[in-house]
Image 1 (cartoon, rainbow over the protein chains, first blue to last red):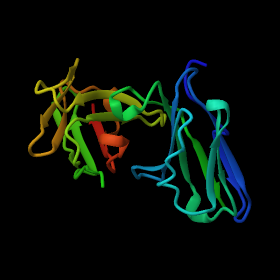
Image 2 (image 1 turned 60 degrees about the horizontal axis):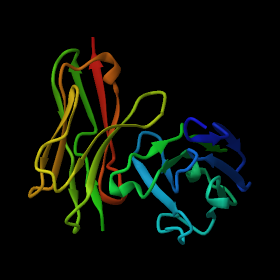
Image 3 (image 1 turned 45 degrees about the vertical axis):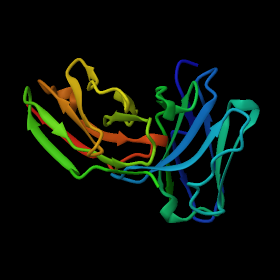
Length: 116
Length: 109
């Protein structure tokens, strides 16, 4: 696609339920990032995928959070047993190579998760 | 550990004025990139400008320029002739894409 696509754009879920958030990166981009942005706050790094390397999971806040990337393309962020503090916008981004090397990373519009 | 600090939570200026957003960072790397991203109300993050640390010349993109002070680990963004469409959250990002907390910039007519 033309840009990074995320779905759903908005999700309301009950506390304790599991949710899956999907990210379709730009075709050919090998690097994929997940960030969390709470209301009015900065971006909190969650996880980073680069090609076939083991993902950098250092930002995942708890074992209720996991992510996978199938076939080096689509990624799914899963939050189990959601809590109210999980309410945030979850942003996905991709870049042609490792973004820290100066390649522009392109963000999706985010998935707004509300846990009630 | 990487840290990026934006000390101005909010700023507001009149249209056509010049505004400077501050950012400081900490890294042990010698070569790295620094970025400024803009997040308008639509929520879509957009790259504004980037700077490679070993380049002494400050990056410029039209009305946007940076003042990069490597020794001081400072990376400020200057917006000249500000426009209403510049209203957004601005995030500084350092090596390994660690982001600052953001500065909410409002351009008033």
